[in-house]
Length: 244
Image 1: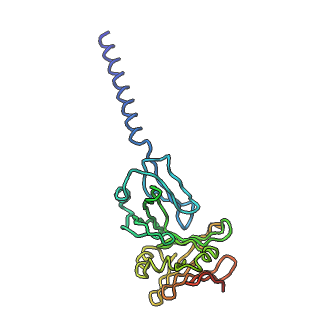
Image 2: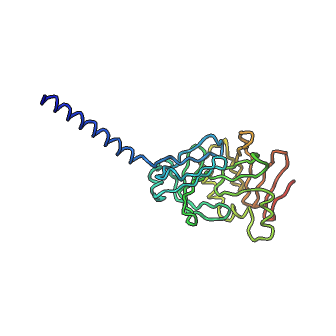
Image 3: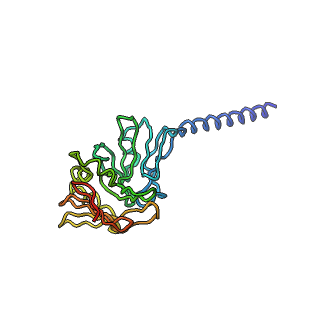
């Protein structure tokens, strides 16, 4: 009987230890979730940039390559957790707003994490700009600063000292852009150092295809240029949007 009693006690202790261990494991993992961001060159390809300890408050827009999330962690914590892809501290401009960010690179995509002090929320973005056309006809372009390009948006700046091209050329030098694009494959990027031009491929959201060497940024003339899906030559300069 004494032997059976000892066995019973041992079994109970083993079960208790297992239960306690399970609870501890659950408490340690509860609330943690990967933060994903879509790539510019294929929205179904998603990159886990970091983990948050507040999984219930993650807002992801895979179609626009950004995620907003809450966390008690610091930017330095995210850097340490993803040190293999970390590039450095980075001033990331989104429509002329300067964001002090952590920059990461993986497989022809750049990503940033920065904090919006206004909304007290972390932002994880794929570094890209977009030409805005009809619904789902947007084209995404890898860029060192983020600009939303459309005729309608350009017209908002007709009487303003800022311009859509200024967002890029006032904040990103040609040398910095060369450094940015030099990590990417020549499949997607052509750099003309003589004329200070960089041409990059784009991703057509509707057809889910890469548009080869689609978008040109010209630092000498401060222009963006590309041919849209209807065959029109589009140019943005200091005076706005032009069809040629």
